[in-house]
Length: 168
Image 1 (cartoon, rainbow, N blue to C red):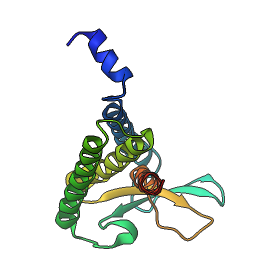
Image 2 (image 1 turned 90 degrees about the vertical axis):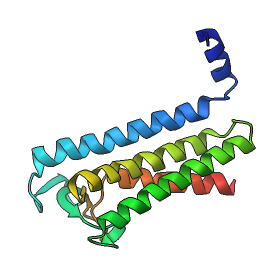
Image 3 (image 1 turned 90 degrees about the horizontal axis):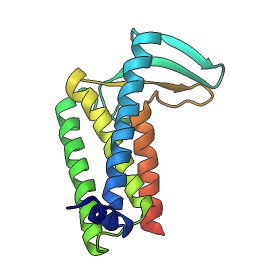
Image 4 (image 1 turned 120 degrees about the vertical axis):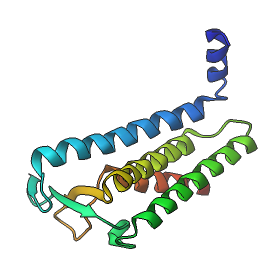
């Protein structure tokens, strides 16, 4: 395929959506892994270490999460890893079926949603497979909320965007 043909296809948006999914996925996964890999060793290297970022608003505290959200399914790393693979497969299958239904044209909202979901899932899955736990470190001080990481943020926004896409 010549470069002109490639860009003609991209212009017609036949493959733009999958490209956006791939870019968002890579960016989300890299942000998650880089923040965990840089912030934790440099500022909060031991479990329980604490750093105020914005007093009374946000702080960093290193927590090893052996479960899923809010610690559910704690110490079930294999089960959670399998469920993550299944979840990623379902998201990809849904996305591919949607692309086929609409002739490879889908909204950027869906593409961003899928990229965020897969990026967040893979970010936490990498921790789980390599370390046996997920590294959480972002703490909102002004509310009682579990400590989380960027993968969790991407998963949350990915779900919100997917719901918005499906409703409208």
